[in-house]
Amino acid sequence: MADLRRGNLGVLPQASLVLKNLCGERALSRRGLDVLELSDKMHKLKDKFTRTAGKVANGGKPPCREWDKVIYEMSQDVWPDLSADAGAAYQAAKAARLCKRVLAAVPVSNMHR
Image 1 (cartoon, helix red, strand yellow):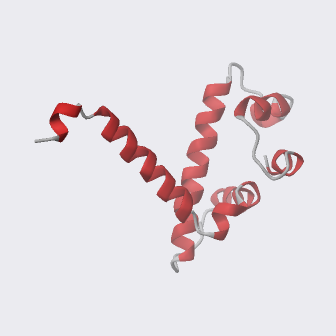
Image 2: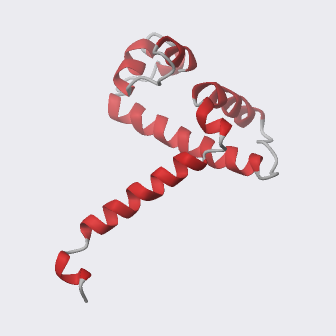
């Protein structure tokens, strides 16, 4: 994914393009992987990396298990902007989106009580 980001002027492409480019890879040999699943997996990986980068920036230890270390290091290449600010901007934007969704779900008549 880091190579795709570099080839796309530093922006991670949409999941459909990532899927198209990764279909031949052994890691995606599972049948039936669709764009929605891949998008969800990318989102979860980004969230996990953001949390871990925040912990490491605040004096916490980096991941201990070998696989988690590999994923963390690869994620630093995929999302270098999150690594730079320890995911603070991403977490703030995520919280703002959640707040906006919650406020949109509250009926207007209940807001004036």
